[in-house]
Length: 202
Length: 215
Image 1 (cartoon, chains in turn red, brown):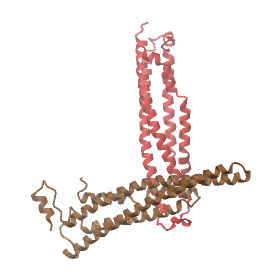
Image 2: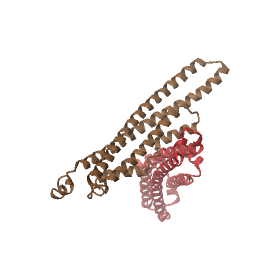
Image 3: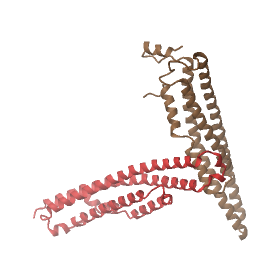
Image 4: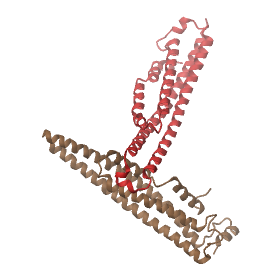
């Protein structure tokens, strides 16, 4: 059986991991920006909550006409601006997810096209510096799933933001952070470590 | 007197020569712009100070409660007291800073009043020269002179109202223990509820009309 199909899949894997490595930087940068925006969002939520709770009538602010409405309007406006920026960042995260997904799909297509030419033992064979094809394909799927999950969870989190649900907005920074903590056990980093020798090999 | 149109047509490369009223209005528009910039800068500085003041107030209140608890316990009260005096000092510093900022803001509004008055005076002069209907050819592009008066009066009202709000906030911010109210004072300071989007638009239109901004 010829070595060529195995080599072409290995090359595709190498390219794919390169893209993942690059996209992972994009992901972390965008995520960091998202986190600071989420903190602003929570802060605005707190301000709106306080403004709603305060009865202006009994305070020194009572003589200022329409102050409560005006302040609420301004705060909601600021909230809208932050949400707009977050939507931009979220689409940047989607771009990362899509480009990783596309790469993974193309590697799998190549493998499936050649699967008859690659024997089982060739798929499972591993060398000191090169993990087996089967392992690397599995890691790719894990990484793909990881980004899909992360993106979806964050998107859902932001979709639940509404002016009626201020306490949720106030809680959001905590929820967002909790999701980040799950990421601490960083799958992509670990996988990239495992394939470091493979990437350096020619 | 209407040199602008003839100047503009015969020497199209040169800047139009403005008559005295137009020059004064143009300078006024630039002053409005600069005062509002200064105001916004002071607003940011004031917010930082107010934020610090609120934080000191909160920690002071927390320490007072802790002290009461410690009094029952009878231990390490003296050390806590020195902390309280430190926060008191912080709070006082912030309030002094806020008062200074309020002073500067008050001076800006006084200058704004003068600007508004001088535009009113130009309108009066125009009435005297051209009668109730005013001049037939606008001083700049399209605005009647009284429109400048309307805009500057609107801007003045806005910043007067903001100044009075800020004065109240400074007077009260250190005297409440209601955290929601403190937060509201802070947001009312930062977001300037009486400065509407229209206010900035009016200013920009005035700058455009007087030639400070180009299309």
